[in-house]
Amino acid sequence: MIRDSPNTSQSQLNAGFFARSEGLILVSLLLLLAVLKVFYAIVLRIDSDETQHLHVVWGWANGFLPYRDLFDNHSPLFQFLYAPLFGALGERPDILVPMRLAVIPLYFLCLWAVYKCGTMLFSRRVGIWSAIAAGAFPVFFIKSSEFRTDDLWAALWLLSIWMLLLRPLKTSNVFLSGLVLGACFATSMKTILLAVALVLAVTLLVTGKAICQEKVNWRSLLVAAMSGFLGVAVVPLLVVAFFGLNGALPSLYYCTIQDNVLPGLFSWSGVWRQSRWFLPLGALISILGYLNWRNLPEMFRRDRAAVIALTLLAYFVLLAGFWPIVQTQDFIPVIPLIILLLVGAGTIAPLARYQLISFPLFVGAEIIVLLSTFPPRGDAMADKLSMISNVLTLTTKEDFVMDAKGETVFRRRPFYYVLEGVTLRRIALGLIKDDIPERLIATRAPVATLLRMPPRAMDFIRHNYVQVAFRTCVLGKILATQDENFPKTYEFDVAVPERYVLLPKRGPLVATLDGSPFGAARFLQTGHHRVQVFANTGRLALIWARAAEKHFSPFGPIVKDEFGPAD
Image (cartoon, rainbow, N blue to C red):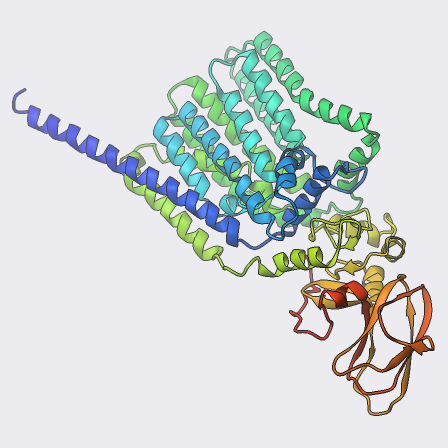
C-alpha cells in the first residue's frame, strides 16, 4: 500500500492538471466564439432574408399590421418581439448591425440548451463540448449570425427538446415542452416538420417497446401526450385570436400557409436531388444513434437518445420529400442535436481516452473551416448599407419605394407581395397579377430597384426610372446622347406624375419644355411632353427633382448594378 501511494498521488495530480487544462481550453473557445460572433455581426454579407425580416419589424414598430397591411410569409413572433428595439434605434442605415447583435443571446441560448441536453443524456463534459462544437459548426454559426426568424426558432426547439428529456417524465414538463413548441409554430411554420418528426419518433419507440414486450405505461403516456398537445395549442391560438380580432385572419392564413403551397413546386426529380445529401446524412445519424443507444447504461437515457436520433431521421425524410424548397437555414435547429450525438459517440471506448485531444482538435478544425469558407471582409455590407442610406436620403416616410423584399427597410412598398421565389413562380403561372406598373403610378413611387423584378415590372422601371446609385433608380429617363446638330427636339412620355428637372451632363442648359423656357423644377402630368435643346450639353436626363436637389445624378460614378438572380 505504501508502495502504491506515490502512483495514486501522481494520478490525482495528472487528473487535476488535465481538468484545469480542459477548463482553460473550454473557456478560451467560448470567448473566441463570442468575439467571432460580434465580429461577424459587423462584417458578414447581408442576406436578402434579413432585410425582409427587418422590413416586417419596421411595420410592427410603425403601427402596420403584418399580413393585413404588408406581406410576410413567416410566422409573426420573432418580428413582433424585436419591434420595440427597432423602434428605439430609429431610422439608421446600419440598422442591421445592432439588430444582429441583439440576436446573439439566442445563439448562446441554443448552446445552453445543448449543454443541458448533453448533461441529461451523457455527462456534464459531453454537454459542454457538445455546446462548444455546435456553436463552432460553420453553417450553424453563420446562419445564426444573421437576423432571421430561424434564430428564435432553433432556440425554442432546443429548449423544447431539453424539457422533454427531463427525468422523471412529468406532465408539467411535457406541457411546458409543448408550450415552447407552440411558440416555435408562432415563429416558423417549418415547425410542422419538426413536430411531426418528433411524434413519429416517439411512436416508433413506443411501438418497438410494445413489439419487444417491454412494459409501457399507456395511461401515463396518454396523459403526457394530451398535456403536450394542450401546451402546443396555447401560443398559436393566441396568435390566431389576435389577428382575428384585428380583421387579419384571412391574410394570416394566406401568407403563412396558402402562399407556401404552390401547385407544381413538388417534383420527384427534386426529391432525388435532395436524397443525395439525405442518404449519407441519414446513415451518419443512424450510426451515431445506434452507438449511443447501445452504450448508454440506463434505459431512460437510451430511450431519449433514440428519440433524438429518430426525430432527426424523420425530419430529414420529411424535409427531402415534402418541403418544396430546402434552404441552408432549415438545418439550424437540428445541427446541434447531430453534434450532440457525435460528441456522445466520442466518449465510447476506446475513443474516450483521446477526448482531451480529439474534442479540441474537432472544434479547432471547425473554426478553421469557418474562417476559410466564410472569410470576413470589411466591405461585404457596404453596397447594401449604402442603398439603405441613399433611400433614406432621397425619401420621406410618406414616399413609397419599390424593392423586391423590403431591402430598403424603412419605406412602404407599392406592391403587396414580396418578390421571392414562390411569388415569382405564382406570377409566372398567372396566380398573382403583375400590376406593379399600375401600383407605381398609383402611389407615385419615386424610387425603385431592378433586382428580382418580373418582366413587365422590369420593362416599366427601365423606361421610367434612371439609376443614380447602387441598385437605386429614381423617376426619370435619359433623353439625349452626344449630338452635333442643335437645336434638337426630344419627345417623351411621363407615366408617373411628379416634379422633374432637366439635368445636363455638362455646361449650362438652354432649353424649352413643352414650349416654355425651362428654369426650375416643374410638375409634369402623365402624358406626352417635348423638350427642345439649343446647345450641346452632352447627355441630357429628365430626373425626379428631389434626387437632383440631393445631388444624385445618372451621370455620376455608379457602382455596376447586379440585375442577376437573387442573393
